[in-house]
Image (cartoon, rainbow, N blue to C red; front, side, top):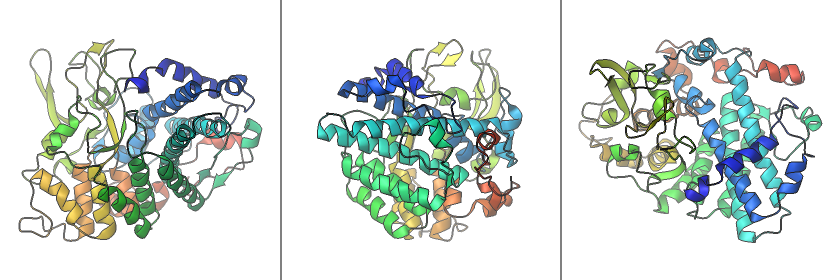
Length: 470
């Protein structure tokens, strides 16, 4: 962890040198002299890699693109937030997104800035005079990150410009939207290479590993309907015995319980100080109130629909959802909000909670449920239910309304992975978004399953097409 964060200030400086607003893809000029002179030593690439990993803080921010899509566009949460552009935030929840939405454009910028930083590293490390094993591992890590970002982008926008090398601002205008099929092909190619270069375990906490690359690759294959290859990748991770479920579900959410055997890829935070990369999930998901000395942002507030999804006796509900808070005067306010990332021992610094919670992007329960989804075999799903102390699928007491493995997995993923930014992506992968959400009053159509291309992007380059329905 120390090696991961100790040069954050320098890494942020490097990242700032790479970004500018010269084109709709947010690309810095290739001739940037800072970049030309920087990539020489292992220390240079260590700093650059840290800067690349730091982009996870933006993409997986509580008010980042994966959160807005995965939760706010699903049937799990709503929003009670009075800061920023409220109308733009409500558009995600209400399926009324417009090309002028400022957050959609911000998300587009965030992804392309991150990808540009990664592409620079991949380009410059090829010719660097460095240890071969170090080069291979760094390449594998950057390919994993780029694949993760393009996977999210193609889910959110469909066809997007595919950029896999540093390009100048002028060149960027010739890069138009690439068909989603080609982007998925690039992702699977990159992840196959990444898994061949990455170790089973990294010496640096929080770095991508072979298991992370294979788990993501398995999920990508399932997203394109290739269950055969999806199962192959996921089963190899399962058979490696490297990962396992923790005995107690609630222990996953202890702010001090990090990088456990259940974690496959985890974003690293360090609480306790204003100068450290502390976690924002507790504050952002707390109700919009200053009753405890800080203003909660009111993001991803829990709705009754998911509260009622939990079966009687399922302790995961208590571990996942708080039912209210008590202010300094002892007054209790009844309201439901996510509980998983609470850190009540964290110091309050300038009305911010310097929380210590990490964020798991991929974990073993996710992999087990994907295996049941892909194979139709409830054995994997039942491992998750056994930990929860619930009747197993196929046994007496299992809820009759989930009478197929597909419905059982859909239910189990919703309650097991609640508020971890999976729900909308799960429904989209199984072609269930419209059926499930329309039945609950969401005005969803097939055209609304992707974001609009931001107006600013098309103003900058008229050759960029718009998604249907916008």
